[in-house]
Each structure stands twice: as structure tokens, then as C-alpha cells.
Length: 299
Image 1 (cartoon, helix red, strand yellow):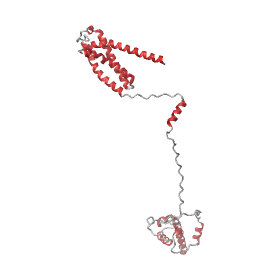
Image 2 (tube, helix red, strand yellow; image 1 turned 90 degrees about the vertical axis):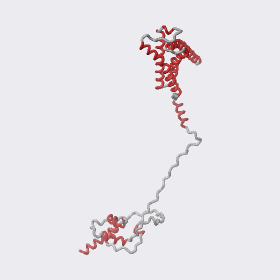
Image 3 (spheres, one colour; image 1 turned 30 degrees about the vertical axis):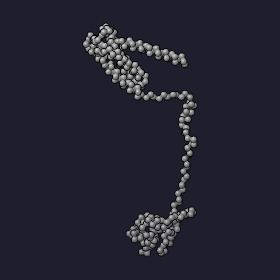
Image 4 (cartoon, helix red, strand yellow; image 1 turned 180 degrees about the vertical axis):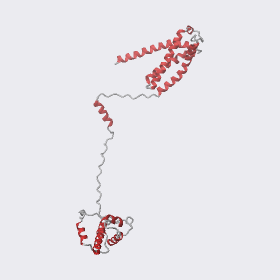
């Protein structure tokens, strides 16, 4: 492990040395180019740091950034590398640029080429200001993605998930209480005829009517004891007075006077007289019996 680290350190140092020597060679050519386009001695000395220094900055940004920002840093690195190569090439072609007392000269004999080279040399410092500031801002605002460490052992990964999902409470959460079923009270059936006292006895029924009533199935009486119900408030009671059986019979006679025998049904009487189904059936049988006796006397 120590030998591996020493080898990497030696490689990095050698690379830094090579880059430093290459910068010294390029520094000479770029300084002469700066003097040729009108820069003073101080500006000409700093000019190589503007071009080759931005290349180094773009290289570092390429190693740090990712995605589109890394692509942008690679484009800046490539552009300034090509620009430095062109200026070094021009420096080798023009012998006048090697003069130590050079103040200003043409970079090419052909005017369009000279104009293009002067534009390239003078625009590189401005580009270094713009692109360098943008790269520094991107590096400062960069947030590296989290590194995911793969777990090769399935048992270790299961143990990690189990420990991560365990609650930190000393006492476990109690189980939810079971809801007990609530038994509803049994419905209480109120017989209208039994609960309402009769003012006078009902009229005598015919033998056929009595036989018909006896043949009807009687409702099964519940063996459960009835629960005492509270008194109904006065507000909840109906404002209509209770009618006796005789009053119900008189009202049913007057309502069904013009009805035919087929229209005299328990449902029709219940809706018209507004009484219970049991009273409606009793009134129907009584009215039909009266009509039968009236028809027999007429014959």
C-alpha cells in the first residue's frame, strides 16, 4: 500500500514538473505576442498567465464538475488550448517577434490574417475574465452527489435495514384497543287498539266477518319483556287528537261512500283516513261486511 501511494505521488510530481516546463516555453512565445500587439512590459509578462492559467483552471473545473457544467469547462479548456497553440505557431513563423527590443509589429503579411490574429490575441484576456469567473462560480456552487457504497453481504444489508427501522423508544407502541359491538335495543311495537281506550264498544260483527278474522294468522308474540320507555315530550307529540274506533269507522264510511267494492282496500283506507295498517284492515272488513248485509236486505 505504501509503495502504491509513493508511486502515485511521484507520478503527480513528474506531471507538475512537465507542465511547469511547458508553461515556461509557452510563456516566452505569448509574451512576445503581447508585445507585438501593443502591450507594455508588465502586461506582456502577465499575458501568458491569462491564457495558460485559464487552461489550468478549466482543467481543475473539469475534474470537479459534472454534467453540463463539466461539458462547459471542457469547451473552455479546448478553446484556450487551440488559441495558445495558434499564437505559439505564429511566434515561430515570424522572426521579428524574437527581437528583444520589439515594440510593435505585424503578425502576418496578409492583412485579413493579421487582423484575425490581432483580434485573437487581444480577445483572450477578456475571455479569461468572463469564462474564469463563470467556472469559479460553478465550482463554488457545485454539490457533489452522495457516494453509494454497495453491500455485498445480504445478511449485513438485512441487519442494516433492520437496525435502521427499529424505533428508539424504550417502550413499544401499545396495540390498538378492540372496539366492542354495541347492542341496539329491540324495537317496541305499540298496538293502536290496545293503547287507545274505547269510548264505546265496537258494533257487532257478522258471523262471516268473525270467521274471516279468526282465519287470519296471528302475529307471533315476543317472549322478551318490554322495556320501559320514557314519556314522550309534549313537543314531540302530534297536535292531532286521537280518534276512537267509532270515529275512525264513521270517517271511513263517509270517505268510501261513493267507492266501489273493489276500491275498498286496506291500503286505500289507510292513506285516506291516515291510520295504522291494522286499523285499516279492520275498517275494510267492517265496511265490506256492512255492504254485504245491505245488499242482502235489498234483495
